[in-house]
Image 1 (tube, rainbow, N blue to C red):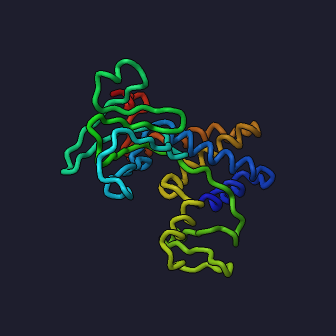
Image 2: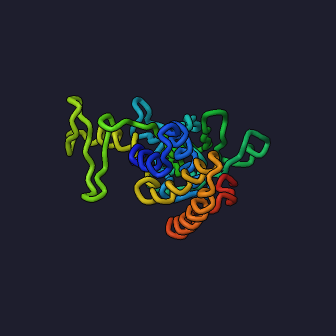
Image 3: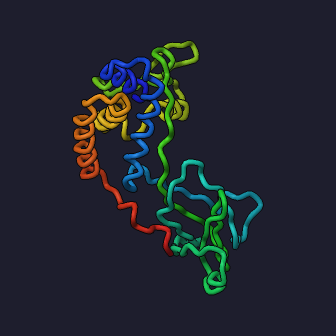
Length: 239
């Protein structure tokens, strides 16, 4: 999807010499769209601690330190769950005297999140928004996965250099798809094309950038009306 769209934009602009720039502009356009709101498609839910999965641990712990995922963008919620499924949603309280007045809280510290519960917790659940992966360009014949939009099917590059309908390994297939696609490319390639062409034509001082920008803004408005999102001004970190 990503490399195919780069090829399409290279053809539209007739600037093969701009291919590296187009790769960068397309990634920038995807990030700009994502940064405009907190989209439900970017929401990840995870269990970061479960006492049942810990070896040689039978009693609830009071403090747990979790390393932030590298593409983590912003928290949505944190829940502490006891052994019978009751949940509490602790506030975010940075290190201060205020922590003494709370039994349960969490806070960010460097590249980690620290979860605290004076009574101990059995399970910690989180929900957070993640950034899109920055994608690379793959030449024809070396693309890890290829999507046929006419048949809506994927094929995958195997170790023999051939494209096959399955690798017989769901994890490997997902990893291949992740290298070449995301939800914006799958559903809004036209918006991405207009946004990227706007950047190309602006750099080239080509007047077509005006039309491309207008089309991009129109497509972005449609995208935001279709996709469920929260305004970025909403302070989801506030406890």
